[in-house]
Image (cartoon, rainbow, N blue to C red; front, top):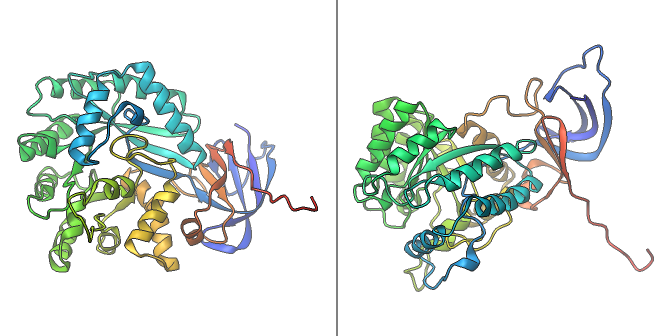
Length: 409
C-alpha cells in the first residue's frame, strides 16, 4: 500500500493552524520508513476528521416506499407495511437497495456502519445473505458490522431463535432485540441476553419506542446487563420514553445507564416522523435526551435508522444532517454543544461500537474525511459536506466544491 504525505490541512484540535499527516500501510505514522516513497497531496486547507460512524441503520428494508401504502404514519402501520413488503424480498433485491444506500453513505463520509438485519421464518436468511455480500463487496470503503434481530418477535415466533443462531454462526457479530413486538417483552430481553452470553456477542435493542413513560422495559435491560456483566456491550436504540421523564427520574435512570454501561442511540428522523401522531397540537419533540445522558456519563450516538420506507420516508444517508437535525430539535447551538453532536457520529460512536485504532493519531487506521469548514462545530452548524474520503489510506470518493458562474465568467 503506497504511502501518503498530506499537507496544507487543518486538524480538529487546532483548526486555525496548518498541519500535515503521514500515512503508510494504511495507518497514520510519525515518520515514514526508510524505503517509503510517499505521494504528496495538498488538501487545500481542508479540515480533516476521522471517518464518520453509522451505529444503527437497516439496509435490508431501505428504499421500499413505493411498495407500501402509507395512511396513518404510525409505528404499527410501518411494521405491518414493511412486513407485507418483505414477503417479496429476494437476495438480489436486498443487495441492490442496500448497495444504493451504502454508496450514498460512503459519499457522505461514513466509514463504519452497524446494520440491523431482520431474521424470521418468513424472510429466513435472505436479507442476511445479501448484506453479507455487501459487507465483502464494499469493504474497500466501509466496515460493515451485521446485527441480526427478530423484528417480528422471538418467543412468539417459533423458528426465529434457530435462525438467529445460524446467522451468528455464519458471521453476524451482534444480536439485536425488539421487545415491543413480542408477547413477553421481558422474556424476550432475558432470552437474548442468554444467547448473547452463549455466543459472546454484543447486544443492540430497539427499545421503549413511544411517548408514554409507563411500561418502560429499559430497567429489565439494565438488570440483565448487570447480572451477566455485559457492561459496554449493550446498546438501546430509540428509547423515546426517556424524553417524557421529568428531571429527577431522568437523572436517576441516567446514573443507572452510566453505572451499568448501557449505551443509547437516538434516531432523529424516524423518531420525529413516527412520534406524537396522536397529538392534534403541542406535539412533543420526542427524542432521547442525549445531551443530558452524555453529561451523566452515558455513551451516546446519533444515527439514520431508515431511508425511503414507512419508518422514515426520506433521507440521504448523511450523518452530519442527522446531527444537525438533533441539534436543532434539542436547541443545541454553542460551539461546545455542536462539537458534542459531532462526537455522537464519530468518536463517541467509535466507543459504542468498540472500535480500535480510531482517530488521527499515529497508529490509527487512516480512515478520514476532508471538509471545507473553519472548525469542527461548523461541520454540524453549517452542514458541511465531506469533499474527500480515504479508507485505509486509499481515496474512496471525491465531491467537487461548487463554483459560482458569474456573468463575467
